[in-house]
Length: 190
Image 1 (cartoon, one colour):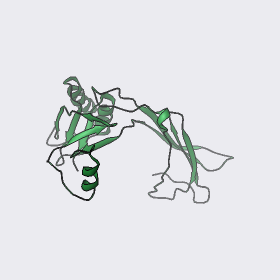
Image 2 (image 1 turned 120 degrees about the horizontal axis):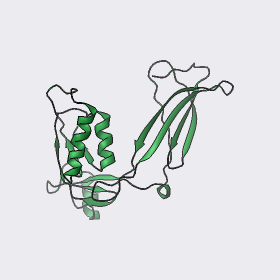
Image 3 (image 1 turned 45 degrees about the vertical axis):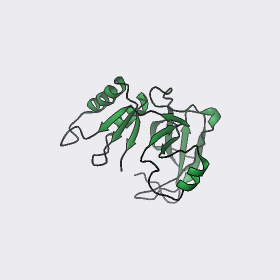
Image 4 (image 1 turned 135 degrees about the vertical axis):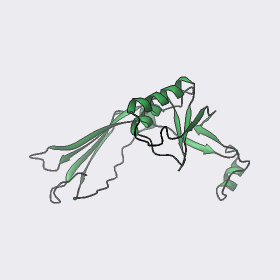
């Protein structure tokens, strides 16, 4: 929750490690504010993230900073950093290389043969993994190190996917970040 006077607004800057940056003037009113910023990531500048065993896990830094809107006394209000990976993921439930199937499936629900696979960056991926259920009845007792250890164990077992059970919970950010870093694709039931 950031606040800037309605009269001055603020400057929001998003910078990607791949060399793109965008700044726009925003009004941040007291309370919740939503801002949409488009930051281009041209294919020529980006290397894709791949699941373990299919290629490298290329990640990029992303910085978001908000500064007061006054050019005279511009000051940083807040900033944050994230690491992101770029990938194209499709859950395929039929022969998506057959144009007739694709046309027919566009208006149908369900699957053709009750099968499914993941296609990542255009390549079919053989899923090697497990189901992730809550590690403790009273979730929240596990440390960040314990969540990292679970993902490291999966990677050392040559897994490339973990399915988060839909009756479970959203895991801490460190768990998702470790999955990205180690090439574990997350299939999160909703």
